[in-house]
Length: 76
Image 1 (cartoon, rainbow, N blue to C red):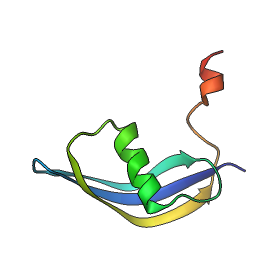
Image 2 (image 1 turned 90 degrees about the vertical axis):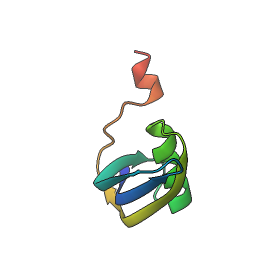
Image 3 (image 1 turned 90 degrees about the horizontal axis):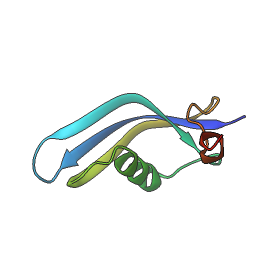
Image 4 (image 1 turned 30 degrees about the vertical axis):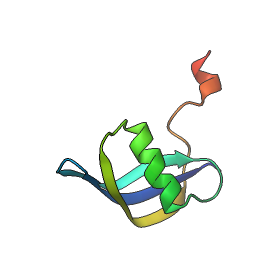
């Protein structure tokens, strides 16, 4: 079974303001992901700039089919 992570997050921007997400889900490789890796993944995937602190809350790993196509599937 494929794994996904479900979590809440809060992102502060260095130029002011912030972004929040609740019950956000992302596909992961493997059985777990650290908060540091998850924070990096969110920032890079959403192409966010001027990010200050990122807080990961209520994280849990769930068994659920991946939603995003793999790079190999996109080439077809």
